[in-house]
Image (cartoon, rainbow, N blue to C red; front, side, top):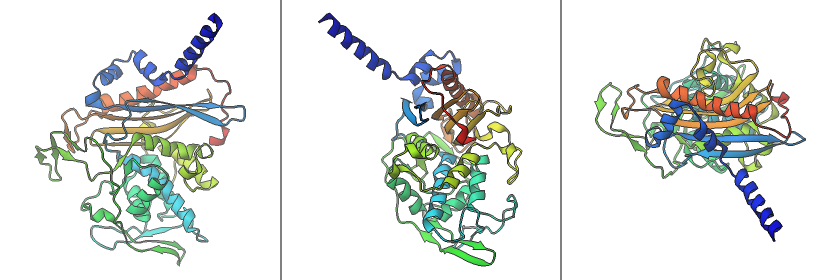
Length: 406
């Protein structure tokens, strides 16, 4: 009887250990004063975190263990530029579904204007051939988070296609319903998307006329009306809460899972994958991790951590060559988000990390007064280093083979 009780005790002890929230333990044990200040004020900073540990078997197949901190998929936050990531993936999927001979991500793309305030695009001087394309827009999205590049993919996809496709894949805590950083578009205007054509020389390969979306994702989210004031387009402070009900939203969990689906397609259920080719994956992995200084077309002068907030977001120093971060960030209205797959080729380390923090002390939106530099960037950088340092020390039964990502 004693041995039976001892065995049961050991079993329960093992189960308790296996269910231990490593992320919570790392946070609790952190001596970082800034991080502890953020943790003590959950109502103000609304920090959400997802850390996914990756373990490989003898055949290098991954398994995943996710740990969460205060993740609430029904709590509104403004996702800013992170919406560009699923748009990029779906733009490639839509090309594959069209399945038109000669039409691919490098085919020159012409955007027309069917109504005001839509604008046309026929040239792109930052590309090698001077012409816009899906591939070039995706490069600009991941290299420097270009807003116009997203807008052109949004117009190619159409609002309804973009949302329905994600919903069909099981990513349902989201709505992507407007262009970014352009004036003149109201809710109705964002339902209309521009005509788009693809040419090979003078030959028209595909034309998509103006599309109207009557589909609106219905989400019941908390705290969509926020703050005490906001600044309007004329620079006037309006002493009323800011209404986010007609703004984009993607939950942190969906962002994490969408990234994971592209970094680990073979470990993702088929219904949740994107319809991409092997070449598409290689293309995405390259530009999701490429640094601005490493690109010739387009050519950029931005520092390495310009869109790499985890580990390095509090510094403009060069990122070591052996570390690659496949990610997408967003920052606007005081909301700061990063969703990333971090790889250290030298030390054979890999992990997924997603975070969102709200840094808007005066609770006034659109006034540009946010604590990004004082709190937001340092906290995300330190969270990345906290998890990275844990990953450097933890034991693995099998060392991951990451050569396929180089």
